[in-house]
Length: 127
Image 1 (spheres, rainbow, N blue to C red):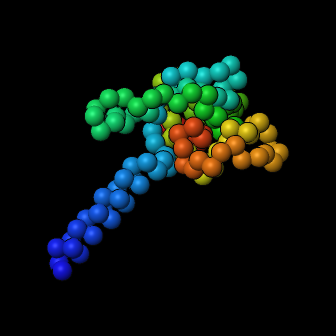
Image 2 (cartoon, rainbow, N blue to C red):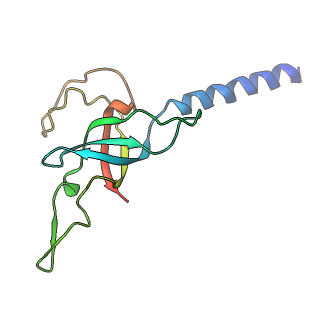
């Protein structure tokens, strides 16, 4: 009886591990390029695959507004909050598909049933 229980337990541990491997929440990525108004960026995830190879680049990732503009502090320009090439970005993966989102504040139809997918990335900060 204990052999069956051990096999059952091991099966579910491995199943849970495989689910977690395919579940995207957030990761660090290096900013490779930005579009003209800094509203989108191409980024290279920094953590390597299990094989030691680089992960695929994330292209045209929306950038949160506070990172797109210079902030004036005491009359001088500050680049502290402006995203730039080479920065380490914090990238999150949204719960639902944003493929039909126009970038505005209007409602939009769900484009697919995917969840926590690398195609639904948003840059929320830089380190």
